[in-house]
Length: 216
Image (cartoon, rainbow, N blue to C red):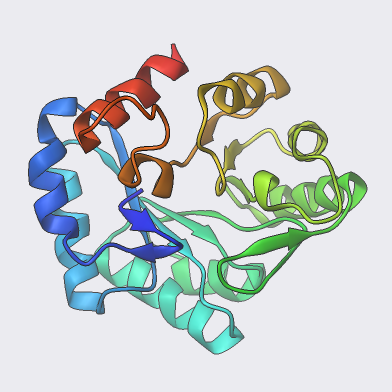
């Protein structure tokens, strides 16, 4: 994710140029930190690179969430992540190719944290599947009331769609634990930009290659 502290980095287009040689095939950003026209430019550049594009909603008001869904539709994002107004967002995305993966549980605050127990997450995931969502965006490592891996297992029981885990992932052992619990994908932003995923590597390109190595 082209994000730091839950905001899209201001030099995202330059970052894309810098990391092109890494060969990433999934790249995204948040709905905050840049105006819609710049987000559109990011989405276009990601597609030119041959990658799947993602936009994660971290806006905190219902009106802002729905506005971000309209932006995602208009700029042609491949996968929209986050938000909890599932029925309204699906209505906005109807007729487009945008896949929607909402937040299960009770997201709150910014940077976003997650309330809710495993049973809550599993129930939400089942409901989202019935509503036609492509999967879920689980803030497992932002949980305030439950063990992150237990939440991942609960989400896996509740959905047969894409189970993406976002937020707070900064170590290779977390990536391995997520895979073992049934996650399909995860996001890394701040840990790569801060150089903390592998502390002895200096460049963003090296951090991202280390992330890819952790996936193997």
